[in-house]
Length: 132
Image 1 (cartoon, one colour):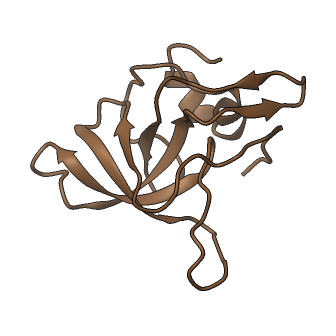
Image 2 (tube, one colour):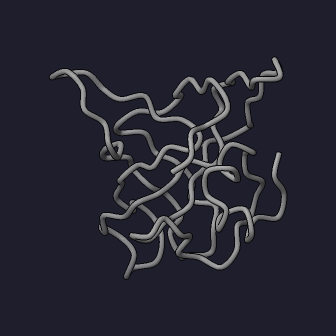
């Protein structure tokens, strides 16, 4: 995975409920863990744009519910700073479902995605409508 070209302050943590913004059949995901996080006991990880998280589907199709899946955060409400000096924050928190090869499980993304996600996951950028 490529490094992210921005200083992203994580706006999400374990237990956060986020909207799934693709056509995989899931609607709501509850974050269980952050992939690759090793921290002190009792400390919760900060999860932001471009981070891979592991979560459980809370709402969606019956065959998708209660499954443990990987997802990447494509938008977050908490604003973060890009290298150009601009600050960007979206109106909601959203993610898309990934498979084991870090490729999107769905065939289309409904909303816009952040530029940092497009740099890190090129396959996600190909099926996105807009990149900001």
